Image 1: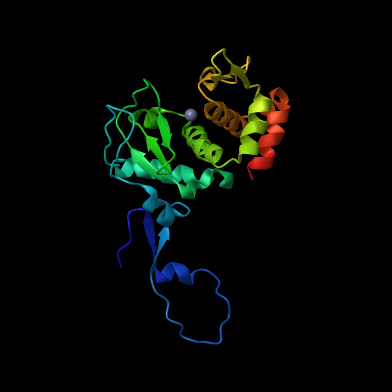
Image 2 (image 1 turned 90 degrees about the vertical axis):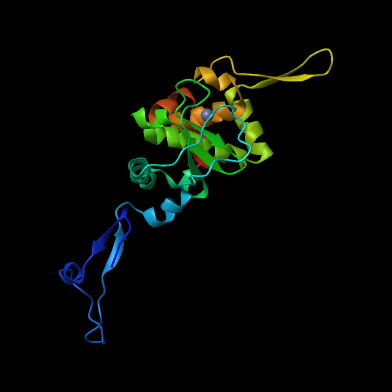
Length: 217
Ligand SMILES: [Zn+2]
């Protein structure tokens, strides 16, 4: 019996060592089987895609094939992520460098993709990067009420100029500098902190922390 590289073969003799429940059927045939090396690897393996995203908006970014080592890195991390990331809903793409220097990863919401750049594999905080990217997908699924509640709590304001054009003004105090880019970047930065330093986040942003606790479960 051949197993996949992300599985180990469990032989009948190994199974024998475990206490087995009494059954009425004697001489029950035991067969070899393949066991995932990392939890749900057989499900997650299907999420790794080698084909580029058609019409990808970041001009100049080049998609590439996943290596086995890289897939293994990610397969090791996925089972450790909280279930609210809904990580099983996304597909994973591999691209060389981001158009934004030093950016490890990005999200493409239409195809439910998370794109991993070379930089990702050099980072130490791989878990929080994946949590951050998942948050962009979670944000997309917030109801308009949820978006408004978050924006109000974080301190986003609307300004209308003389011509009637509406501007979104970012909060005066930002959790991270790039939170000023958009509400969903701000949201994802909050979720990242909520995940890595929950106590600090609860202390500094009690209302947003409560809001996220209600949404992320
Ligand atoms: Zn982001």
